[in-house]
Image 1 (cartoon, rainbow, N blue to C red):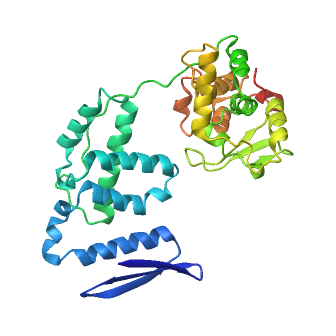
Image 2: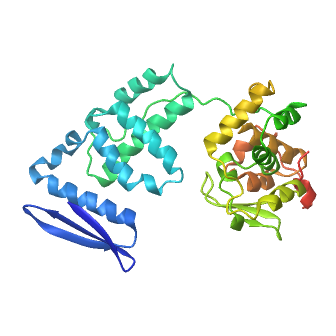
Image 3: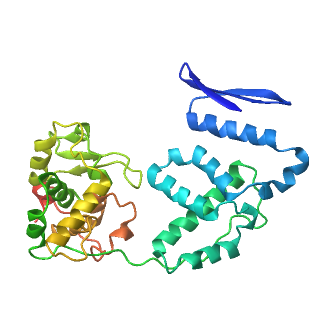
Length: 324
């Protein structure tokens, strides 16, 4: 069994197994310590004469557990990725990884087609492939044809829902005070739900009129200029350690409930981001300027907000970031 202890800022690993000499090593990072321990335990388990049959000894469940221990905690969206991995372990169960070939993946894809969206299928298939790739790279897994690849359905074009006349006012009438501030700040900044709910006091610079977004979806930190409206919203809450004391699912449910009461159809909280980004283009900002605010690393993702063409950069003014 492996034991990991932290001493003087380093993680010390010791692996003992009856019939084998004990192994020990120290690491700066816990993830590296866990990875090494798993590899040594695997080496203890495998006799040389069975090395050629490694792939047959792994079930997807076992390999996914190792992937969870070594990889998941280092990803940006830990809870979402772990939840997806848990679902895949439930579905594939004890299937030997040697049986997960292109034909198997295609059959899995087809079985999900009428149940979930193309985007969900893509995430699930890619999770399976990531686990297999991890097995090959770090666990000695051997697959006759490598990591299988299959054709996936073309993803639908992103939503382009904007607020219609009178919807904003109706929505606000049916929201609690804190939720009204969340909605207003989403419209002023174009921030994602997860980004809004993790804003801390230290992420806000009133003097420079910017909000710093740390560890966003694409992994690239960015600074968002504050309009007069967002400045007022921030000032009213900046005394708290976090600006909003709300859970992500609470925001979604409250928003959906308010839309239902206001008789607003087909409007989601994430559509506020689309509305905010569209307003930035209407104010005359260029594609690079909008991308620096929205956090899009690929300019092509902004194509549904504006017809992409070169045009003169507007002179920077704080009031340019004021929403309509």
